[in-house]
Structures are given as C-alpha cells and as structure tokens.
Image (cartoon, rainbow, N blue to C red; front, side, top):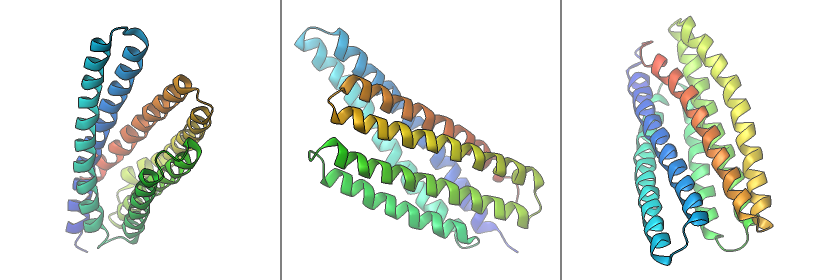
Length: 214
C-alpha cells in the first residue's frame, strides 16, 4: 500500500506541533510577564509599557497558533485518506472550533459559562491528539514498525494522564475566577499551559519518530 498521504500528513502535523509548542511557550512567558509586572509596577507609564510588551507576545503567540492550526488541518486531511482515526481527529477539531467560537460569544457572561466552553475545548484537543496518536499506531502496525508502536502506546498513556491534569486545572481556574481570586486563577491557568507543553513534547517525539517509518 502507498502511504504517501500519511507521510506528508504526519510531516505537516509535526511542523504544526512545533509551532504550537513555540506558541504555548510564548504565551507562558507573556502570562508570567503580565503577572509579575501587574504586581510590581507602580507607575501608569510602566504598567502601560509592560502591557504593550505582553500584548505583543500574545499577538505573536496567536499568529503562530493560527499557522499551526492550518498546517494541522492540512496534515490530518492528508493522512485521513489512509487511516480512519485521522477522520475522527478532523471531526473533533471542528467541534473544538465551534466550542472556541461559543466561548468568545459568551464572553462577559460569567467565568463559569466561559469555563464550560474552555473545558469542552480542552476535551476536544485531547480527542484530536488521541485520534492522531491512535491513527499513527495503526499505521505503524501496517508497516510493522514495532518501535513506533511501543512509543505510541506509551504516548497514549501519558497523554491521558496529562490531559486529565489539564482538565482539572482548567476547572479549578474557572472556579477561582468565579470567586474573583484572579491571582490564583492566573497561576492555575499558567500551570495548565505548562502541562500542555509537556503533552506537546511527548506528542512531538512520537510524530518525529513516525515520520521515518514509511
């Protein structure tokens, strides 16, 4: 069987994940900067300068995330021609888009309502990752690559653990924000981003190995 579509697809997903990791890392830096400067700067001018700096980082993070998103869609679409799980990943991805749009639509209607869509969006991200890893596992079985199979199984276990932690942190952050404990909410959100970095690194290692199995 010709796995050209899968090979090209996984390559695009791999590059998209690199961009995603960079985007998350920049978001972490911007959040830390915003948190520190918000607590330590006293003058209005200094606070405004710090806000512009963190705002620029958030803009860069968003631009990278958008590029990663486009590459990921193209990659999943390509690989879905060979493996059904990538079609499931594509469906979960679009549900996640709807959840994000809904989250923006209810902005200002309370942290609990917004938090609900954050949790739904996070769960969709988990499903996308789960289906991509599962699809990669099936492809590895088809080409008899035992090393990728073993790494894929380990990756699935770690992803389940990490996303469970992220979901719990997002729920805690939502509850804290609802009680106006903004500092604790920011710290919890920051922890969730750091755990998502761990997910990305584990996931990226599998994709890197899977690129060479065809």
